[in-house]
Amino acid sequence: MTRTMAQEQEPQGHDREPGGPPTLDLAGARATLRLNRPRQHNRLEPGDLIILRRLLDAVDAAPGVRVLVLAATGRSFSAGYHLGAVASAAGATGAAGAAGIEDSAAGQNAFEGLCQRMEAVRVPTICALQGSVYGGATDLALACDFRLGVTGMQMFMPAARLGLHYYPSGLSRYVTRLGLGAAKRLFLTGQTIGAEEMLRIGFLDELLAPAELEPRVEALALLLAAQAPLAVAGMKRALNEIARAALDLPATRAAIAATLASADIREGIQAMAEGRPPSFTGR
Image (cartoon, rainbow, N blue to C red; front, side, top):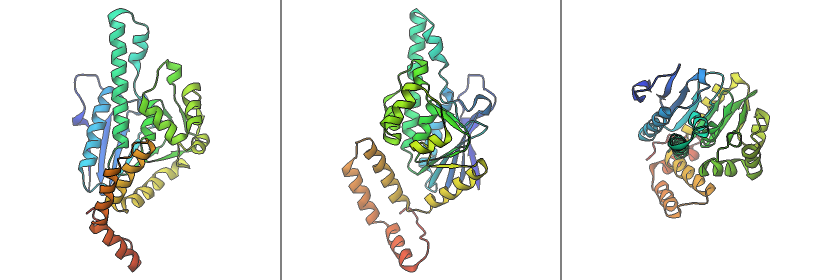
């Protein structure tokens, strides 16, 4: 059965744009988090950041979920965070200008927190990029474990064009995922790159024809969901910590011990001996 968590969580008191807030569908072991503002190229509004964090918390709290897919509606994946306050603050003076700059900084901090939260989700995450991705949404995609894209898509990071210094964890994610040279090129030149180059530098794990995207996402989701949950969660956390040069060794040792004492490792060994697929319970 599929159930949706969506519009009732949208903060009130502001005009809603065409489309709607992000939604979460839970279907068996797969959760799908979807951006739903296609007319604005799935630009993320301040209220959307709150909803997205709540929905990620819901994924972590659902023991049956073993994989999360981040997807979007429309031609573009996402234009990133709405930074309209930056432009107004830049042209303002006095207290009003300072307030605008503070609002912009708060917005960037909130977006950084969302990307960090995405990276920390308990289960493996797949970003299904059905269209082009821009600005902060590129970091949200990089915070996912796997990124599958389609031919004809593009990406660019406009921070230098806007006069905006990007937040530290986003810079770090670009360097650790793509390498220093690619990070400098994308951040410092503001160049737009195409799908083939996105694949070459490692932004995309796979490049597919549009009609092939959802079947491939589903196949990868099924593969990830079939693995042992305790081992996957522990190794995902440790790998991300290693990428940040911040491995929590005692926690990693504890996670190893937990898997060695689990029913899942006994099931995995027995299934291999019997030549059958394992059936893991996460215990």
